[in-house]
Length: 260
Image (cartoon, rainbow, N blue to C red):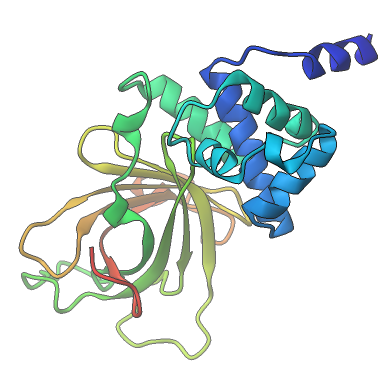
């Protein structure tokens, strides 16, 4: 039975958009995992199909991987034969696809994709921790370094990958000599003008959520709020609002990154 199903997959000759996206993702992931370029991939696909390279033009393959043109089914079939055994089970990608389907938007998903100026590495700052009823001064000059946020575009996906390393969890005004780090990974959308990042702590699985938006006239592109439940790394209250925390944050391009 399994051999019959495998043969049927190999003989597939028509490919809808979902099939094309799935093949494209598998090839791009293979290239990333094996650190190869398109010319090497071209040779591997040609060998898997017993083809001469002339029958799989490099530019045609590049266009398919970039999703810049709708490639004909013959080219997709060659790619499919090579990619059919490759994994397509990235849990973050599964999360992103599920959220995109739940939230909706344009059928092609483009409405959820973050803009190009939000792709890159950003330095995050937040309000310093306070006790009692202290009132924060206006503006952002007194805010303290908080984290580094990295947003990466994902070809053929209606969302971006996002990761964050928090180095000042306690929002201290004095930098620690050996700060504890918290690392997160997840997905980022633009569902309705604002940006939404849904992440998890890679160690504990604790959820973290950002709502961010553009701020005209400021030296940073986005500002917003971060929310996170109290997890195993924290002193755990049993009731009340201290079961979660929220902080105001802003993000500017990190040193060495071009400004949006």
